[in-house]
Amino acid sequence: MMFWILTCALALAVALLLGLALMRTPRNAQTAASYDLRVYRDQLKEVDRDLARGVIGTEDADRIRAEISRRILASDAAAEETGPEGAGGRAIGLITAAVAGVVLIVGSLFLYARIGAPGYGDLALADRMALAEEARQTRPSQEEAEASLPPQSQRSDVSPDFVALMEQLRTTVATRPDDIQGHRLLARNEAVLGNFTAAYQAQARVIELLGPGATASDWTDYADMLILAAGGFVSPRAEDALTRALQIDPQNGPARYYIGLMLSQIGRPDQAFAMWQQLLVEGPQDAPWIAPIRLQIEEMAFRAGFNNFVLPDPDELAGPTAEDIEAADGLSAEDRRTMIEGMVSGLAERLADEGGPPEEWARLIGSLGVLGREADAIAVYNNALVTFADDDAAIEVIRDGARRGGLIP
View: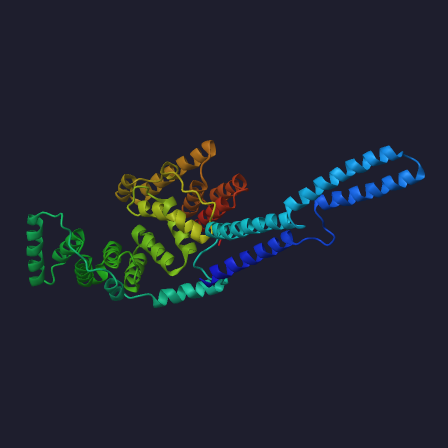
């Protein structure tokens, strides 16, 4: 609030100074009518001098005096209509000052709303990072986040038969505390009903029973239920679950998406944008985490300072589909590598023939680096730098691809 008060006060001060300058009557300033009167009086004196020298006759002098007198009367009347000296100028100055004040205040607020950062203090980068880390360490717990929300209510659009089956499942699981499949089924169906607290409690029992055998998917399911129970807030407990998932599978899509969401919540949109952009490029485009990324990444790019970011069309990011990935899982290591190299080669040929967005160039560079084709990756990287030499945002995307491929630090 203090910022807006100071902004308005400064704008008003500038408008006031401008108005005073416009309304001030310069020394020796006079109206047009006053100036005309002086001229006519000088002309009368000139007539008398001409008459005395014999340049004009008495009749001509009388006629000229009459004409000048008529003009003096007309100028006098005009002076009375315009008021005292400078009155018209002061009125115009006052109106101009008022208009300038409105334009300065409204224009300043509009401009700041467009390119500024309302709600953010004037902090150095190091201070912002420190505040983000402090927000991360002091953010509410899972229990506090849930307590701040309205009580969870079960969905009302489920059939009575399903509700009866759920009651039976809860009773059965309560009598069989070591039944992994029972708890897994209970967690999944409690989530379907919107009972997210009960869902993550059941999923926590699944992880406890599995012990070291819990998969990355088990941990991300647990984190997902925690986040849904907290109304979309990533609590420290959910972050711990996501970290465990990434320790098992560093490329886990849901975990990386939620970590990006957590980074955005603590004030690190730069890191969130980088993580989501990489997920968007990697695909596949039908993955469940891609849709929420596409809905939020433009705002995240703006918050991170990437004002030139343009959300690419899904067809431009066509990577391996879910069917491709499933097919690759059933192949040997050598056949899988051959399949991936074929896809990479196809992408390289298309970019060479038709060109493409920087995200595809970055994906190609990263893939070549991962495959160990460093020379090819460097050649594509250099070509991409030349192609997008005038686009700083595109260059940054391409460099991210080079970092993923291990070409640059």
